[in-house]
Length: 396
Image (cartoon, rainbow, N blue to C red):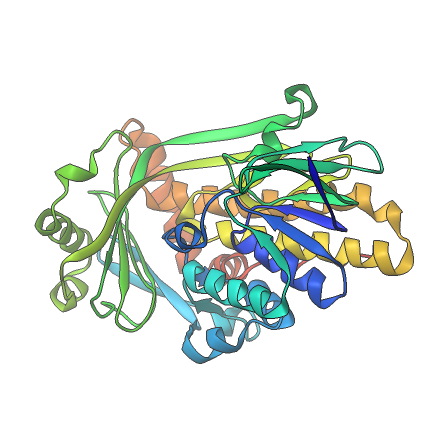
């Protein structure tokens, strides 16, 4: 068995693992990232594209914000549609100047990969069978297979940034974790197309036929979503049917303005809310989807991972610079306070905007509640504050 040594072992080279690695590297803290897939596979994942103000600031802090600032699309608001009624949510005006940035997760990952390579920091791709060990001791380590050899990576701390299906959470004894979960009876059918956006801002539409979202990746690439039953088959949705149904769920003026084209990617994503507590086990810390999943309705998944990264980075910074090992046991509690608020907002947006066929009473209640929020400046402010992202908790 060959041996490597580092200060922080990071499992997973998605955006959260790469962002944590870049922040730590810039602070002089050594990291090794283990990724079981190839770089091309990681970049091939089609994911979110709305970045909260806090994540935008964190990417700039990591020194990887140049292309985002040049090519990303700042959005000062978005639209909520209730049947044919359109209401503008003025993010900037309602939050004292905050906004969001439309910049694809694939591009964030690409920027972070390039920065890590330029820095000469170590990322081992095709590192299979990673397994954390001795997490509750002062000398944890990770074993893995790479290029036909078995390796041992000795470290001070382990960051599990390897997603919902990753090994990090699964390596914690089940009796140590409490699981909270809600699975929704529908999914999102998403289409990526090289067409101009139907509107300059994102449009979230509640309709009697089901939810629809008009999003974008750039001024020439769009991402549209339709609520469909959870058991739906993507093969049953040729492009013509998708575009026709999308037009049915949009107000007439937007439907008339919609430019359609061939899809370049089409998939159905299930919706679920999921949280495990605690988010740490000894010297291993769960980050992002390894610890929590949100429905995409509130644009919180990637952003929640970024706030976990910020918390862990700032704790480790104080540990290495000031010897503040007492802060380590606070990681989970700090993260979970923000996680649950984001879970609440994502659940609320999902409940307000989607059609639940089996409960006519709740449908009327959610419609009335959404109208109440949209008719009130305080209600619109609450939506805006949550959408741009609640502040990160200071580490003191």
